[in-house]
Image 1 (cartoon, rainbow, N blue to C red):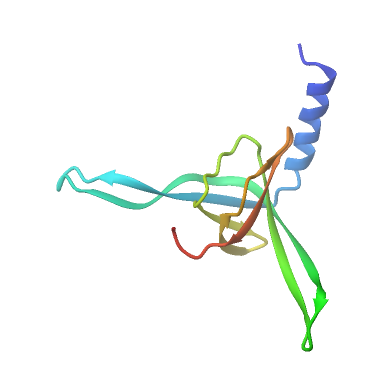
Image 2 (tube, rainbow, N blue to C red):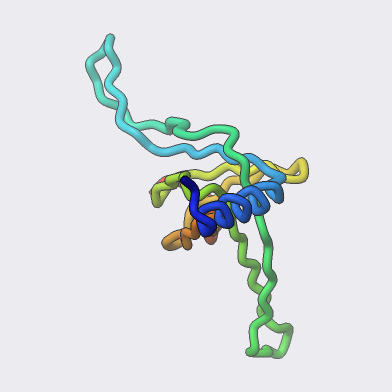
Length: 127
């Protein structure tokens, strides 16, 4: 039997997921043993594909004004299912509004019953 709280959370989750207009692919560096050469190599491996998501962008202006201009910082936040696990250091490729960009997770995700929010930064290279 579904409680009223669970029913409300499921309805809220469906509402949040209805806003997802993008998809993501997660790529991790993994060790793989070549059967022929018996050598172990490390390389990128796709661990999740076509996961619905949404990017949100927030622009922050610094309170410190310099002689030339105020500093501007953009925060990119990923909204995705709370069931998805994205490990630190993974490359997260997001396509939304016909734009594709590579990001990496920055910090610990905020996980809620309806979604999780992950602050992203542009992907530079595997560390």
